[in-house]
Length: 368
Ligand SMILES: *Cc1c(COP(=O)(O)O)cnc(C)c1O
Image 1 (cartoon, rainbow, N blue to C red):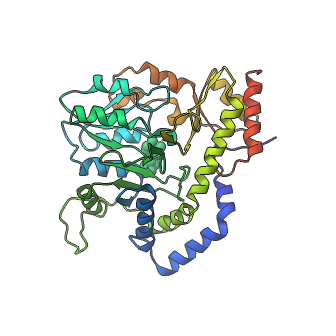
Image 2: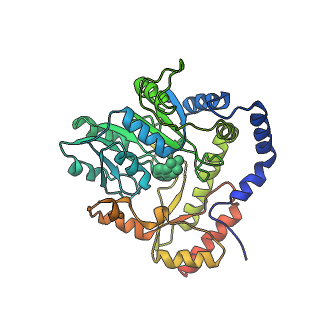
Image 3: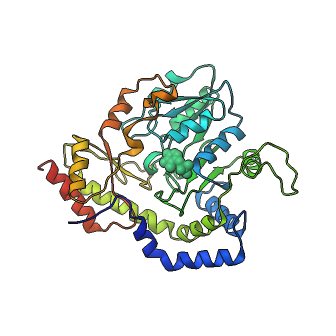
């Protein structure tokens, strides 16, 4: 039987083993582990690639968001609006500043539903924080317009969207800042945890630069309370290596998404994500290929029996459905997305033939 794992970590190492062990040898022989050249090099590359002024490596994207929100002045008494189809990390970053996370609906494209934002605004609302989910940027024109009308800040959870664009502008560039995650299964993944803050705001950059390293300045003086949230230099070196081929990686991911959409588009039982070129304003990097499927759980099980690994994002629950966290909202459109959505395998290991096999299995399941 075929085996097409959702993500093939061992294969990734097998493909790049020699280069990766060379990197380990090089960095270790220099003893360059914390805040060293590879990190600075990587930060420069990130800023250049995204066209965003400043990039700072931090321990993970969750920290990146928390640092961003704190640097932007979010705190006790504030409310921040986010889209509930996101990782709980978006909300926890808001929560740990002392502010209240306020979830709103996702729309048909699974991104923040523009029409739900205004009803969630109260006198306490301080910011809107869309998630650039699945490697696609939300309608930032509309979000920025609402933010301007109500005098709100904008932050982005762009953890899944390094290199994704809206009207030629990169994810992370629209408001006060964005975060990127280098979790191993992300489009640019390291071999452990890693993240970055992207911002065009010098003040935010300066604050986070201090905060990520115990509040210490270059002269050793501690001027603010800080954290230990640094991106390991070894991880930065690995990221430098993969980042050099990032264009190739994105093109391959878009090609796989295109294969799925060409093959599955006539199925009445599934709803596909926006296809490449469906909207010239959007440049998607396809962190995920998230379909909505009739009899989702049965389909998942059937695919598994055929050797195909799939994933239900966030374990199938939107953030506001975690009632133990104190949420009371009802967001029926998002809840329906959570009951029907499934991620198909899309990674740098899968071949065209394997994508075709996955599609044939899906068609077989629906007898189509
Ligand atoms: C992966 C992810 C995060 C968290 O990233 P970490 O680097 O693991 O902290 C946050 N938000 C979204 C949308 C993500 O996909």
